[in-house]
Length: 208
Image (cartoon, rainbow, N blue to C red; front, side, top):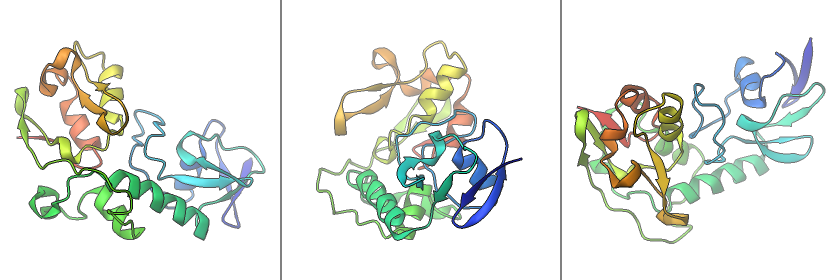
């Protein structure tokens, strides 16, 4: 049996599991935003960071190794996760009151984690994206101000071999999710629109 130490407790894990998978199988709560089981690791949000043998790494992309010592709940890890969340909310649409996620139990994952980790939206100053809803073909609604560019929808369309699919366009804070050739996002979601809606951590995608 393979084992590692997680926050002082010895847990068993299966060969091929990541630290995140092993921890969750043992009942530990390691937060994620860009992780969706069907897609594998994205490592874009960095909210799942832990320390493995003294090194800070993303739990979703780090293989569980026998004898490893994993720390997931130290003050240092709390601060690292808070910083990652502060970067994500720095240009996020600011008016949560207009967001329909407010009517959903548990709210959006980003808002829930930002509150849990006391993330300060104004720590990194940059222009906030505007609140906007775009009605797309196929009954898809896209709210670009809520998108955190996690990459889950892009990966899902790749795996489904969508005829058009989705991709990233731009650089830095200007990166956005789009269909190729500036086509409507809804045209890139012919097969996996419903799964992308379920997987989206901020509700930026929805179906009417």
